[in-house]
Image 1 (cartoon, rainbow, N blue to C red):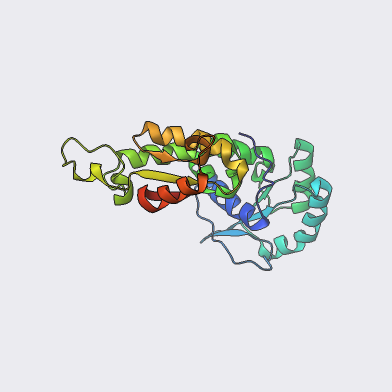
Image 2: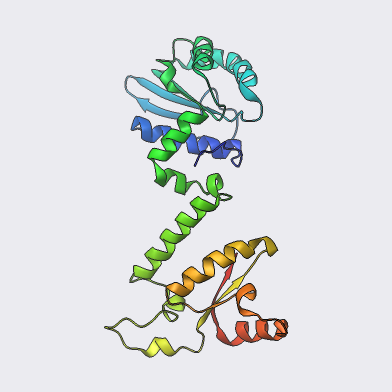
Length: 247
């Protein structure tokens, strides 16, 4: 999956850049509160000097705006005098773009390899899928990643000994345990959609839950033409639902 990072705010992009580049460099970058950044969005301090990371989320502004902003930043970079300066940006960069930025940044930049454009960040994400998963705002509108994350969660829950009691009652009894919980009166997971556009997701999720042994109530799957939907909803919620999931 290739991202353009449009779903991220400036603060979200800074967090992602710290995690990704910190992993690439094998260091932990300090994070700072929102405000004037003094030329840095992350810092790794060492006895020999600091590694400074700056993140510029200029997706919509483009390269020309990024160049202009970096000229303004040059004085701050020189004052910081870092041992190593790293720039991360959501702008897609060519080799010539990186050379232009290197000239603007000055001696604090060790090499153009320390300029991470959109394609560099995507390559890093492919190498570090755990970081991709950790940044929900990055992929929350992306169906393949969402499916991967949810499938992993469901599988983990199914094999865990620490399944919440409300869900454990809905699963087939473990061979080594009593069947007391298998006959609980409340025996369904009730799915409520936030809006009609969640129908597709419901049609994907419900069969996966049922395949794991759960019983599911979802209007698009359970109700039939002619059913008195209000009565069916009320009865299921009052007497059968052990857990309600709001999509």
